[in-house]
Every structure is written in C-alpha cells, then in structure tokens.
Amino acid sequence: MDVNDMLSLLRSKGMKITPQRIEIVRTLIELKDNHPSLKQLYEEVRRRVPTISFSTLYSTIQKLEELGVVKLFDLLGETRVEVNKRPHINLIDLKKNKITDILDEDAIEFLRRKLGLREEHFILVNVLVYADSIDERH
Amino acid sequence: MDVNDMLSLLRSKGMKITPQRIEIVRTLIELKDNHPSLKQLYEEVRRRVPTISFSTLYSTIQKLEELGVVKLFDLLGETRVEVNKRPHINLIDLKKNKITDILDEDAIEFLRRKLGLREEHFILVNVLVYADSIDERH
DNA sequence: GTATCTGCAAACCATTTGCATAGAT
DNA sequence: ATCTATGCAAATGGTTTGCAGATAC
Image (cartoon, rainbow over all chains, first blue to last red; front, side, top):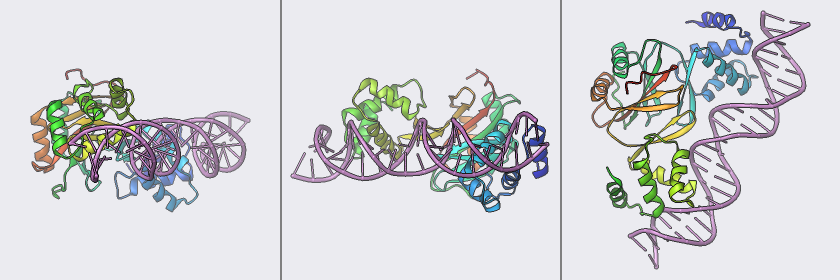
C-alpha cells in the first residue's frame, strides 16, 4: 500500500485530506523504523510540517487505528505505531529496545492452529526477549 | 515455586522479609488472575495489609523483576505483573482485555527455532488478537 | 547498630480531552 | 454552508522519585 492508496482509502472513509495528514501518511510509509513511538513519529512529521501539533498527530493516528490502517501497542511505556501489514511477528529485544519484523508465514500458521485462531482474527505476535543478545540472523 | 521457596530466595538475595513483602508474595502466588495490573495487585494486597502503600508494593515489584522472579509488561497503559514461569504464550484478547496462558511446549520450541533464540534467552510471547472473540478451547 | 524498608507526598510524563478557530468538501 | 480538522492548553492517570521515620537483621 503506497501513499496514494492510503490517502484514497482515507478519503473513501470520509476523512478529510489535509496537508498535515498527507505528511503523516507519507512519514508512516517512508519511515525506516517500522515501529516508531508516537513521539518519534511526531518529530519526524514536524520536520516536514513544523507547525503541526501533537494533538493533530494523535487524533489522526486514532482514526487510522479505528480504520484498521495501523496497529498500536505499548513498549516500555510508549505507544508504538505499526502500519498494518499481514500478520507477522515482532521480535522485541528488551535489552536493546529494538524490534525486528519476522515475516515467517509457517510460524504464524503454526501458531494460528495451536491457538485456535480463525482467519478473521487479526493477530500481532510480540515475542519479548529478556536477554543480552539475540541472534543476528534476522 | 511456593510462598516459602520464594521468601527463601529473596532472603538469600539480601532482601529483608517484612510483613508487607510476605503478603505481596502470597498474593502473587495465590491470586487467580495470573497477570494482574499493579493496581489490581495493590488492591488485593491491601485487603490483607490495609496500611500498605503503593510505593511499597511498587518498590518490591521492581526488586522482584530485577531478581527475575516476575516479568512486567504493559497492556493498555497498565503494567501487568506475571510470576516467572517457564516460557509460555499469553493469548491477549484486546476486545475483552483478557489474557489466557498457553503452555504448549511445541509452539514455544517451534518459535525458538524459527526465531533463532538460544536456551538462555528468556522469552515471553504475547499474541495480541484484534477480534471480537477467541475460540474458547483454552 | 546499620543498612534497608515503609509510606507520604510530590514530580513526572505520555496520553487524552475540551474547545475556539480554521479549513476541506 | 456544513461538517470535520487543527492547535493550544489543561486534565488525566499510571508510574516514578525523594525523603524522614521505622524496621529487619
């Protein structure tokens, strides 16, 4: 899903497309970090629209969550924002405070079956690792 | 691990065993909810030691986390406390705000292998489910 | 006796809300 | 013209800290 796709989707859902929202969407899609905190996201968007308020970012993100465009979860007291891709695993290294996406479909399918999850369940698997280091294979 | 085991462990680590701490440990072990929030835990402990302060609970829980006796994670803005059992899966129903323990060893072992986690890594798998309902098999 | 613990109160800080003005359609 | 969005500022609420007196050992 690229920037224009997402803007079209939002427009079709009745959201108004403002300059602020355009930059929020662009930032979400272009940002290298796939799991920014609200604060990180805010700072990055402000680089593009210096006058935007946190309120505006906040209410937009809330809307995006309602529409299922992003998922929100908390890590160490901060809200993390993630553009909604297919189900995957976030490998969360709590020592380094670093998240790595794992796209392995077998693992997800295996878990689905084990956990009795149906197709319509949207899932996000956060694997919290309490250790000094995680294998760098990924 | 029962109450006395845990108290012995704490004593061996240099912690002083106070009446407050005894009841915190007992509550942690006896509570039906395996993943209470700090607030829930506080209210339950207060039922046993009405004069205990939140500060005392808080600092004790911090110590227990440092010693690896409990794990802490956040759900919907609240800190959840979990007595440290073997690696397992928390099936988190975000609609009902309910957590179910999944003890399936195959699933954990499968994930370990898939994710390249070594034996010494302590892991906790939180599966966030964004759906109206989860199969009641568990 | 001494190092640690307790409990009170205040500080902290990310999130959330209220509302008057501005803007998209 | 109307309905929604923006941005300021204040409120909220869970977490965290400072410290004086109390307690475990």
